[in-house]
Length: 348
Ligand code: KG4
Ligand code: ZN
Image (cartoon, rainbow, N blue to C red; front, side):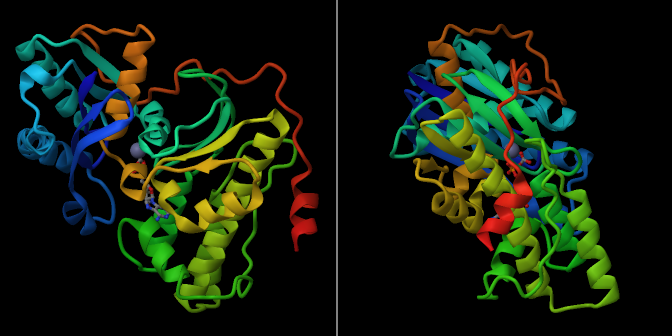
């Protein structure tokens, strides 16, 4: 099954072609970073207009690079949420128009499900059940994935998303936009961890996360003491990575997961990837960095698994800016939560 997918939920206009949910034929991403650098973040109206300008050339390139003609496409898919309403509508409308013109079936795909399914585009096929950590600019959630397309939320952020914290701290340190890669590069110039130790919000008794206190601690430290930005970046990254990695690995141990899947833009962070791999004996998969950040290949992969399991949509599918993970009900009996503080003390 050859799927053409479009992703336009935030500030990347993307189209991709994936075969049978696992084989990447082409993935084209037109980044709007240059347009949002000046404002230090995405202005929704600017993003929508850029999507309109980029969508047709991006789709054309995805078709050409995969050597596909419209008659080769078995299914057209697009992200229909969560995301910015105006941005979502551009990609969704374009995908519906193509499906109608080509007489192909159409599927709307949840962006977060897409991030998780980027893991199926790697060389190693993920084994389920798995614990997934979705960490992006808009979301931070720990998920139990028992079987395909079955998601149970274990915990999520109570305030800022992890990526949002990276972006805000990069702004405080004047490191540029987007902040995640800038923090990672700057932190990598410091070899020793522990020069600056910032607070970790363990949230005893819960699988949830919180990053706003850490952001405030950075703000205060910079204003009061003004240490070198690289030390602050390293201290901040160490704090975020330790909490994310420890909770993810503990959830996998507690639930007996067969693997750990990282997903979303922050999963591109190599400190996070190595921390989880070091702490866990289970296979820990993460998409290649370009497939961690927003792209359409992950939407095509998810669409293929959705279609295989009998999902279908018609062209009346709408955009849902605050769409949640499908069926991500919280567990009635949540798995026992370890004592985080004792875990962190034992490591030091
Ligand atoms: O998944 P994504 O591309 O978009 C959303 O769905 O939000 O994630 C973007 C987020 C941004 O906050 C960005 O700073 C962060 O992912 N990010 C990173 C890295 N690359 C991107 N954070 C930490 N380290 C990175 N290498
Ligand atoms: Zn995303």
